[in-house]
Structure formats: C-alpha cells, structure tokens
Length: 322
Image (tube, rainbow, N blue to C red; front, side, top):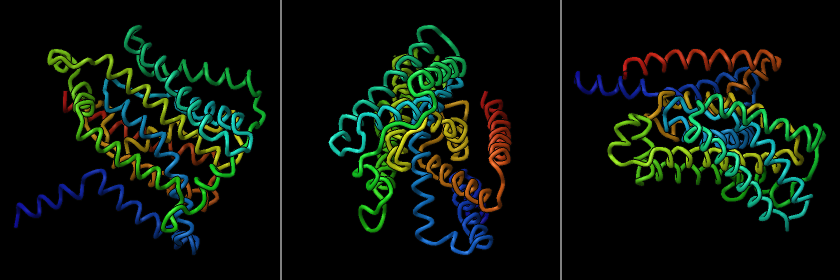
C-alpha cells in the first residue's frame, strides 16, 4: 500500500498531471466568474487559439529539448512575416492556398537555417542569435508593410481554421492533434528523436557516440521556423488579414507553454504532450484575466512573472542534474 501511495503521489506531481488539473480548475473558475465560459462552443474557440500557440510551441519545444540553453526568440517575427507572405499570395483566393503554404514553409525553414548555422558554425549563443534574427525580421516587416494590414485569407483557409470539419471540431484543432501525434512519434520512436534527447542531455557524450550534434541542432531550428510559419499561415485564416506585429505575442508565451508542460530548460527532458497541455492552460489563464478586465500590461506582467518562477524552478533542476 505504501508503494502504491508513493507511486500515486509521484504521478500527481508530474507537470502534465498538474497542468491538466489546473486546466479543469480554471474552467470551473471561469464558469463561476462568467456563466457560459465552460460551454462547448467557448471551449472550441479557446482550443483554436491554444492550437495556434501550440503549433508555435512545437518548434520551441524541439529547440529547448536540444539543450545548450536553446530558446528561439525569433518565432514571433517568423509568425508575422509568414502571415504577411500568405495573405499577399492568397489575396482572398482559394487557388493561392497551396502556393502560400509552400512559401510560408520555405520562409520559416530559411530563417531557421540561418539561426541554426549561426549557433553551430559561428558559435553564437542561441539567445543572442535568435534575438538578432528577430530584429532583422521586425525591420524587414517595417520596410515591407510599414505596419499596415495587407493581404486577405482565402475563404477555404478561414473555414478550415474556424469552422467544424469533423464531429463538430474545427480543422485547426484536428491539425494540432495530428502535429501532437507526429511529434510524439518522432521524439519517442525515431533515431532523430533519440539523438535530440542525447544532445540535450549530454552533447559531448553524444558526439563521442557519433551523433552529428551540429546537424541535429540546425534541423531543430529549421523545424522551429517551419512550425512558426505554419502558425502564421493559420493566424491569417483566424483573423482574416495580416498585421506586421501579429506574432509578437507568441515569443514569450511559446516558451512558457513548453516549460509549463514539463520540458526542462536545460534540455534532454520533456515532450510535446505536456506542451499541448501547457498551451491550453496558458490560453485559459489569459481568458480568465480578460474576463476579470485585466489590461494588457497586467496580462504581460502575469506571463513574465510565471516564466521567472518556472525558470527558477527548472534552474534548480539543472543544478541538481549537473
């Protein structure tokens, strides 16, 4: 009985279980504050927003798992640029959907490649490299669009993102679920996934075992860029038009979602299932703050404070591992 109790206690303390418990608690709190908050239609709307954040966080998750204090601060810029590219390629026509998604993926992969090469070949710390790339992207967006909305989402894209596709569930949520399955399979069932955990846990040992650490790291940043590009493409379908700073909100929130889901900031430990729960929890928290009429400054303060607390907690974990 003692062993069973200890096992249950350990399971109850896992980040995924804690996140799921907090999700339920926030839904109950939201319903008490605003009747209808936990209705099925409202939950679907919240999940659409969470799925877009979750797609950005998928790439962030991979970069963080790869270790070496890997965090991609450029994801917000890639999201914004991809939304602008997609909108201007589609211009409200379904015929432009396929070319737009190809262009977005190429854009994300290109800037991810630049980040990866900067980190591996030039040995620039990931935080510095991706922060610099964010500045480049923001400058590019100012030059190209000057902050003016441009481009229109195709009706087919807007319908996919916001309207039920199967069993009353919008296509965006189905896409997020598919990404979750593919991420879990890649990380837990493939050689690439094993190598990601290896370089995140101990890069020197992984190199001695023959793992091409630099190549893996470049791939992780490219994946991060591509996931951010997909999110930018989907944001266009959700909002209908693109803005030059539409992705700014995802830089900090994607990191928090990953850490809330139990992925260690030191790398080599965690997974995407927890990140999906973290993204959902974060969107619920934001919705609760909005329900309480907390202004944007207050919400940003709450997110920043949450990240600091989580970083302190995982910083202890890193010290203990070291």
